[in-house]
Image (cartoon, rainbow, N blue to C red):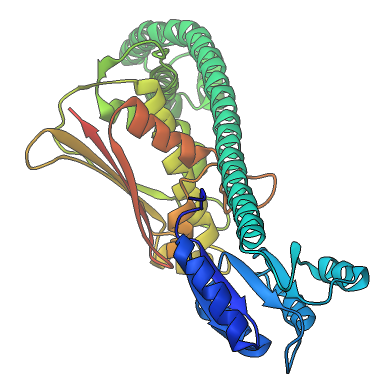
Length: 431
């Protein structure tokens, strides 16, 4: 018994009924699945509905001959790789060369021997099967190598991004520490200065009570410096300086909170502190400009427990989502006047809550910006995908954000968006 490829289908095309019957019987007895036809045109139509693994094709036929039939099969992408063996009584070299140039793989001369017919068929079926197997293996290996290359590039870019964030974190922490020392000194001394000034004001008031009519030279100096206004305004100046220093201290605290070095282990943290520190750092982008009013940040915080997490990496996610929300709002402002924006102000809503089973926390960051189409929503977490102009977006932000949430914290990051109505990102983290 011949070693035949399984489920092999052979099409036999010959205008002589006797030849068709002989070949049909030989092939079916061996175990092949065989279909027949008696002219080239109908054979081509038959192939469209069922592709054979090999074609035995008579050269001399009415209508289109075997050469033309073979030529049409080879011009069709769907049938071009099917091996064609010509059957002919004409064994001259010129005909064989013509057939092979058209695309035939072999010739069988009539009358043919059964063993020769089967040997040639088996050889070309095995060659085709081997070719298909090799093509499949090459495609699989190519796909595997492409995926490996893509994964390597993604890992390299993510490592670079993480390293950049680590270096930035160290830099920010260092700057915050350096700011904290002089600011702490000023904050402490302002308290003493306030007491000293108040003592001086009390002394001046006491002096004026006992010496209401000083010499003319002192009266002139009092008028020149507007002492009455100064005594009222000086406490206000001290209070303003205290408020300014306190803001600097808050920024310093936010920088240190945002840049926490926690790459090696998880720690228990208050998620709200991380969000607030990120908002503080982005505050310069939220302030009003000549083109628009302030971007409103609406906090709707639930009562959340501390969770064990890499807070520095989560802050990176908050930074990315909030920065993207601001970008979307600025894009939505294009073509709108200040008054129109004021009537429908730019807003970012940040909601936190517990799930019903109290096993997870939800963080929702929602803007009322331009929104996204369904097609963009499907791609935004893809590696290197960005909707921003060349030079303004790397396509890494949301890809890394999802990696941090999903792989580092076992959570989920999803998006809901409608064009023209804004976008909402939902983070789900286990407690």
